[in-house]
Image (cartoon, rainbow, N blue to C red; front, side, top):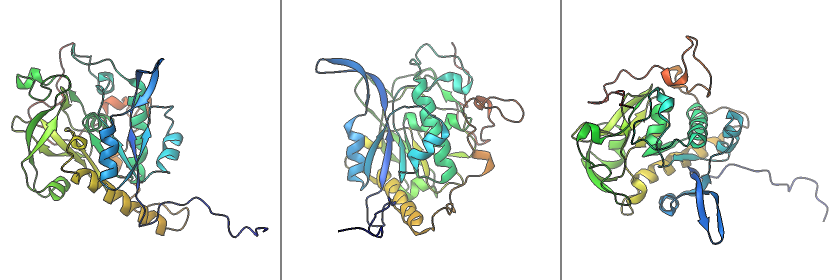
Length: 310
């Protein structure tokens, strides 16, 4: 039967009842599979399980060319974003020389995740950072990292051994988004990191930390949902509240998008001028590189982005 064009289905954002689509960033590493030894995009399956169990549909986002228009196209098809755990962030991005224990940088992943964050913070896409993801968010906003926590806390409590998570207690700031999700705390969480947030990026505030002062959670002002934790909630199979909160925020965003006329910007789709991430390789009006962007004045604790020995 001939069509008059009225039955053509245009692509549409998810309906209110649909599962929101959550992009999850991945590794791009050398791997072997059968007879092949090649670079591959991969991610531990537990991240996918966590998103599925929280009510979302996970989509993998491996490192790729990172122009903002490409990142915007990708995020335009998604309802939420997880910046997953992984390798150390390149210390050159926050103005430090590499500590002897800092891993080789994955500059392609650093650039891709910053491009995704730049767009997500601009258009209001819900974001959850996990471990490395918290550090990427902080650095992207002009903060700095402690490159090797044992130099500060005196032991390996945050990364006890390869392939094994430690457990630490995290105190939660009352009234924070994190407190609304997890309750007043403290909460026992799985950790595996030798670095941590030092100086805070612009617009971030600490909402969870350990007794020794190590930052374990940050949130971003002036954004519908931007939360990052230093621990690994994907490993907490008995507690999906953090992932569920991201999925709920993504579902609410999809509902808002579906109800707007085409071409109408989101009311939550902007951030304050103080938390905009400049494009990679640009300079501020004062000539500073992105690594020198003005950080938050909030005290991050006992290790405020200190220079680590080379």
